[in-house]
Length: 52
Image (cartoon, rainbow, N blue to C red; front, side, top):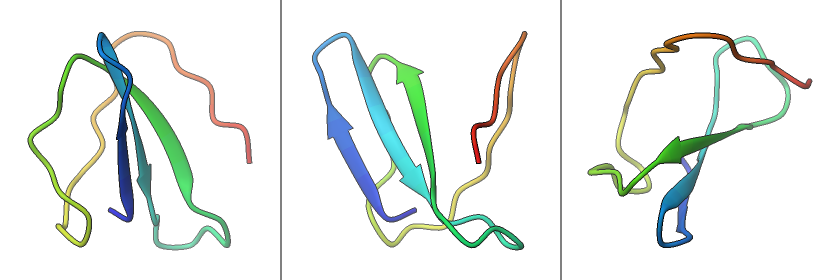
């Protein structure tokens, strides 16, 4: 993970994904307990769209 930006009710997490040239931005509900440089995973519940 490269960056976390908090917006009060949600956060934007930017992660590097193996096999993709550009990082992926993920908007999550509420605060997150991860920090830049920490290895993390992605789990999608419901519908999602990846814009590459």
